[in-house]
Length: 145
Image (tube, rainbow, N blue to C red; front, side):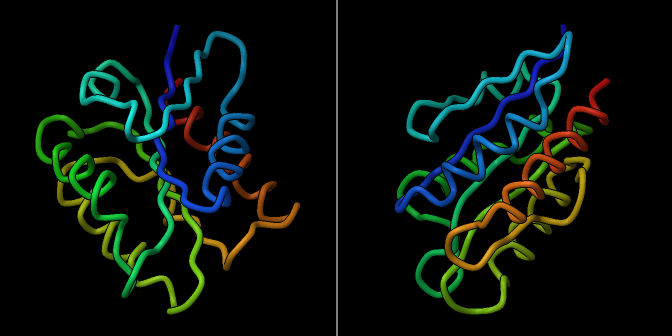
């Protein structure tokens, strides 16, 4: 059975809603999907998973959340991501999404196989946005199978 691990940080609940929608899209027969907040996640979760989705909103001047998510992402560099299918998602309130472009570049440099460009939404994703998240989950599981 293939496994998908979705790890996220959410301050307002927007990224959590996105994570749940990504999981809904990834759930198909013969696939185990787990969702964890980053404070409950460990590198082993990533190592064991066949595909990974990471979610985090833009914080401050368009950076990842710095106390939990940024250290976790930094710990995944190198062989831990080599060749693994990866999806990124998050929401933002201001700016133009630079944090996501920077995050995607970092993950590509670490060897991850990006499923698609990072999926971003301004503030709270509406139903169209959540449908996009479900589609991202479908793309992730398709790369794993």
